[in-house]
Amino acid sequence: MSHFVWRRQKGDFAPKDVFLPLPPRRYMDTPKCLIRSPSEGPSNSDSIHKRNKAFFFFSVWRVPFMSTVMQVVEAEDVKPSQNSEAPKDFKYYSNLTGYCVAINYVIGVGILEISYAFMRAGLVLSTLMMFVSTAILIVSALFLVESQARVQALCRRRNVNEYMSDDDPNLFLLSNKKYEINEMLDVAVGKWASNAYSTIISLFMYTALLSYSTVVASSLVTLVPFPGITTEIYCNVYASQIEPSCLLSYNLYLVIFFLLVLPIAFLEISEQKILQIALTIFRFVTIFIIVITTLIALFAMPYGSLFIDSKPYSSFTDSFVPSGIPIIYATIVFAQLCHHSVPGVIQPIKNKHRIRWVFPFALFTTFLMYALVGLITSAYFGTNAFPMINLNWITYTGAGFNGQNIPVYARIISAVVVLFPIIDIVSAYPLNSVTLSSNLYSALPASVRMRDSKLIKIALRLVASIPPIILSSFIRDLGVIVQISSVFGFFITFFAPAILQLATKKKCLKEFGRHSTIYSFKFLDYDFISYIILALGIISPIVQVIVIILERLGILK
Image (tube, rainbow, N blue to C red; front, side, top):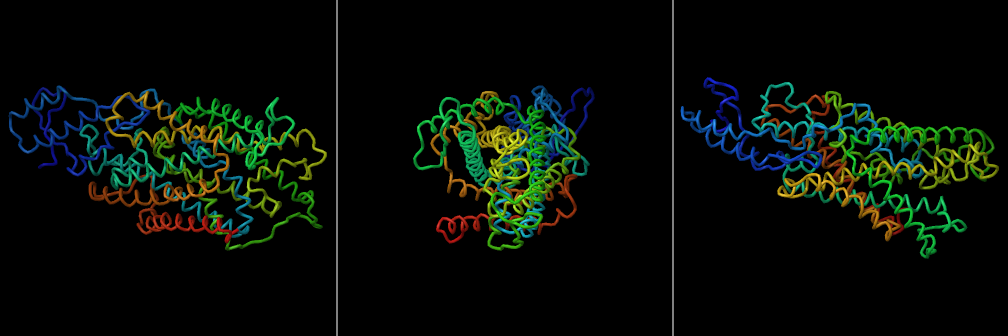
């Protein structure tokens, strides 16, 4: 009886008894279900929370005077909770646009490190590792989509205005609401998990944004002399002694980068759809150029001064190099890491029924691109591949890479490939700023989140966007910081999705008697898959720390 409430329906003139299930008491103290996100207007969750408790009290007795009492409650009736609900002017996009946004989250400067990783682990072993890793990453991304649907269902059960019966076919259908991963962990696991994730994602995202701004400024100051300052000298910002003019150019490029990305960072992901589609096309074109020009050179002439007497002019033949497994594994995982952005990507998608295909298609597409780039470029450049493969195109001549007699079209191709990381980061920086600010918002106390959301959103976007650019002026070589922060990525990619999958399945099975969603595939219902990914989330960071230590000691090279 204590889980049911009697109330009068609005508009009914004759008495009508309606029983609506209330949530079990254990859910009534979980605040995340009733808190809005930065993208929405004022929330009325406190009123609903108080009203639910009032219903809980009145449900003990069902007597005639309740009609009058409940009319008083109805007079104060409020709209359903707007927890993370998209506002009326929210801009939606298609599944294709969602696919493009996911691609832009995935494809970054990590693709330029694939060739070096292939060279370290061998062509065949690297391809196999990439295929297996991509399959695991797809599964963990689907875990997050499913968990989002289950958390929304659990939170709807708390709200009498959004009640659905246990056998309702739309029980696990995604709405236009959005719960960040730390909010889902709060609902499904507990506050400790939410706080741990908030800390880890903040450290990871700040370091990523710091590396983005550093890569842009250092690349520009090296490749594009600043007019009137560094036109006649070569700048290396990683040197122990830096020319004052080079340092000035570096900081000026940081200012230009800041002025370029900050306005974009204030746009919601759905408002960036034209930019994201355009940059997706640019990524595809650049990767196509990398593959085609390398293939032509593979049958035209050897790389640089290498002497190879037969076609194809491949300078790398190793297939299996087991010592390179940690390097290729970490490179692949972080080159395809987009899991922290899953809630933000799926919220604006209008057709929620086909969301489960967005991330599998996006990650499989990036797998094909990475495999092509890794196989072809490592086969041609071999041990001469730069850690960032785009730098090999500095000496591109049109038919090969001998650095002489460069036609105009070859200079254009060289510029596009060499500057690829810079243009890529112009879209990646705002996307990651939005993700970081959303996670920072959801970690704020409830009393702060209930205030003016526009001012809070602006403040958090500034907090997410500005500090990394300022720090880039002082920290130009990330070194150990980037390597150590990469350890946190395994928690984001494996541990958090797996523990969410297990916890939300358990809660929904207890609450609704079922847990399968329309975003699931049958094989994902087996718990042992979740436990395997959970184990990867525990073991992988430990192995990565050991590798970092061995590299720093010079034992592993």
